[in-house]
Length: 232
Image 1 (cartoon, rainbow, N blue to C red):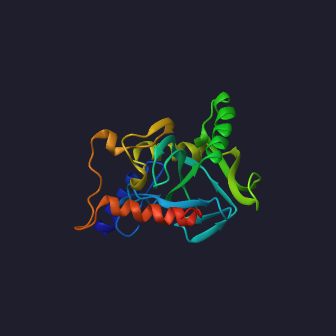
Image 2: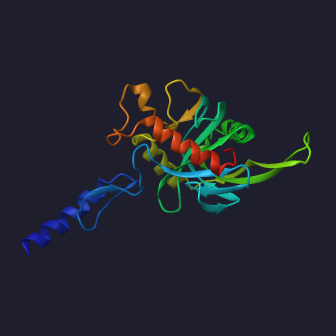
């Protein structure tokens, strides 16, 4: 009886000290985050600019729209994914399965994100305050014959829940949010929010298994990305 009473009394005390994004593991009593995240390895969503669909890991199709609330991001210019130097928008969010996830946009899609940021800025808001819906919009190459088709992402938004937005901002400010495969130490960053680059902090990246080089990992990621975007 004494043991049961002690456990019951201790639980409310622990619960009251939890951060908004934390919870208790009912089996172990351990304090854990609500959101699943392997540091540096978010779940990868991709925008297929050839087919006009979003997918997960280049295979599982999500559809022509993707709705998310950004928790961290950076808009930058860099040569990543073996695609030459481009403007990129890398946005991190929590998906419907409570996984920290990321999605990359480049080209005209990045311009469209800037068009979203501007009105928010003048309302004292950021992308972290809103729910964004990205939509694949069909375009045509008119200067070549036969005409080619491609897609860009356009964006709309609505206000997010204030309490939820506050929780997500606290989470992303206290957790190191980044994607290891897209990191360099020479990116020209135009704007960023709660994005962490360990290379600029003098930190070593996670060690790979013996015989595996970072160049090999990046080459594999680049190949999958290009296949998924019709560029391989």
